Image (cartoon, rainbow, N blue to C red; front, side, top):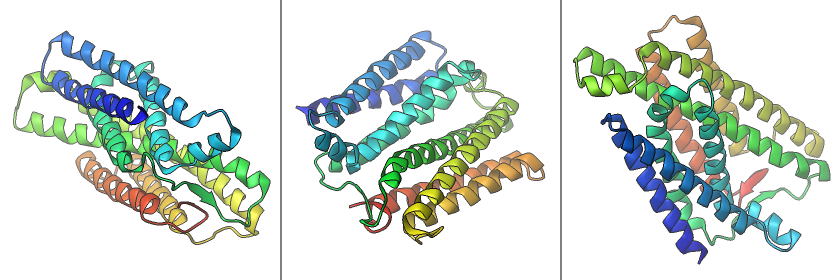
Length: 284
């Protein structure tokens, strides 16, 4: 029953993605309204499904379900939905549909990737030599780090929109699409806003992680694949943040750098969370 409900929810996200992209190529308000309606319905269903899946009658069942590999992808999608809702009610509201044309397909991809793991017994595990305090800090570390990396995703979205808008202006392309997208200055402001939030949150997540490891192991690092990915992500995000602040490189080139490094980090993220099965908090 759960599997069927999940597939139906996934279909709704596919439709949401379709209409969100279609709304950029049409001035018809009905496509925008359908996108919003489908998003709120599919997001509500996904949240309900997650709570049904995670919250069980026993505490042991809750711990087991919340730490499963499927729940890891669910949490990614859930946090992304929260950020999307935040953007909807934020100062970026007028440009919401432009950024969501890539955000909705991303959620859909995450849900598709999670399908093989719906009934998987793999879950987040911590090495046996850990303290009780560490087990309580771990969820905060994971949650804040994920939010930081998802804000980096939005700078990736903004970078794609910048290149699309720039390309349309240069070739004097579809005026309909040009009028639908934010102007280049607005996109650049959004990118700077997203990357700064990403850097702050990821820094906080790393600090919590270092404290957590030090409490349990009296060391600042365990040399695991996830640590390498997180530190490398921070270096990349800090570098892009610095480049945007200094403004010595053309926005066109910064956008290309942002896109390339996000795709690299996304590959490493999936690899370290699916194929790497050893480390401090691996999905085993």
